[in-house]
Image (tube, rainbow, N blue to C red; front, side, top):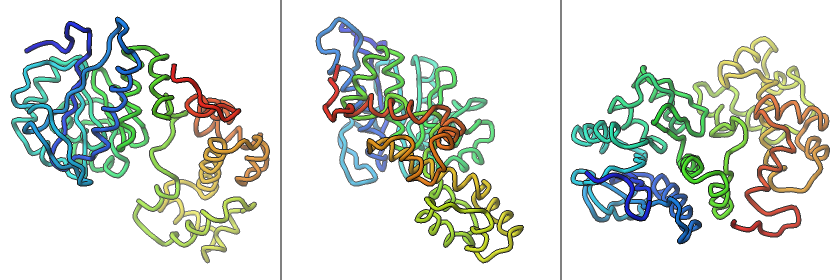
Length: 342
């Protein structure tokens, strides 16, 4: 087999797709690597050559109906990729149920410099035994199933992407682009990765330990629906000065029962849940408006800038101003002009 670099110092990056894959799992990382190559131009520095592999060469249909074209079959692909990423989809049985593919994956894991997955592609890596005793992540909706099916895997359901040794896994769908950006930064440096992020209007790194999904959506995924009306009401009234007693009354429960049921259905206390909703709205406000931190804090239900700062530090590990600065580094500047690509 040929190694994953050629005479032009291109890094061979292989994406493994399949019939029914999620289109963005493929096209998102593909675009990141392609833009990184484009930005390097003819400079004498490492770039990427991206190939799409599937069971057979030629077109295959993704879950959304979009047709993609595989450059080759993984069955007879003779080169060794520098990076190999397995994508996911609603049903990864074409990969996890394919004994030949899993054996090929094990072989490639011992030869390629790094191997990884996008979204539910983690199930293929786990089935091949490549995630045993490693930290890993996947789409939030499938994290519990991954942990249950593969108890030797240390699943982090909240991570955007995880690196454990030379094995990388990413969360749901667009997180594949976060992972690809991280790989570009490893290979070509921060300035190139930042240029790619600017070109694609992405964060170079999502701030702090940002969750894969919203607080309200997270609550809706757990068992038990007694609090569904209250959670819907909270999504509209989070700006108000609310006490736990008032929330219990709104839910028509005693304070003791309310606290117990709320924790059981959401996994957090009522006060923490309310703080997280307010924080999520503050995040969007800092991303999309020029409001002062004090005004943004009060608009989202915080008592003021100091309470907002404490919430940011507690949940994201950065200050509100740092968050705003990171967002603007990947988008329009404060005068509304586009930042240069390079």
